[in-house]
Image: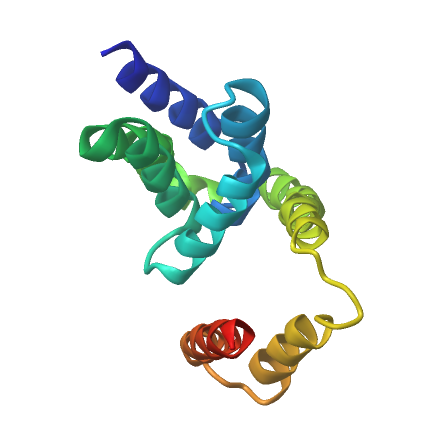
Length: 178
């Protein structure tokens, strides 16, 4: 029972103190579950991020579900997901209650304008760590470049790119064994 509570509280705190949405939570989740609590190892976390990104829904919620499930099965995933989502739900209800009054407030607008660059940095930090741990070298650099070109320039839907990556990984594994 103690670990369920720890999962809930850990993800509740992350959800409560993260501004910027799902991607901005990733470095905090990593610091808590990999570095501080040592619930999972870094490589496992990277794999969970890949699965969380591939699954429908918010990446931070998906990541919390995977961590909770790894530690305590279905009940652990529920504890972690509720902990992660509940602060946002509470905050949204409070904002919706008072938003009409705050919408035109110049101070509130300046606060949000100031937060945006910090959110970009919070999103960039785990991307940089993931890129370093992905063992990208001169033989594999074409893969992330191809993904960027396909998604941003050619406008291929990300789901198709993920499907193509799965097929590419299967083909690579098949030919490498031969």
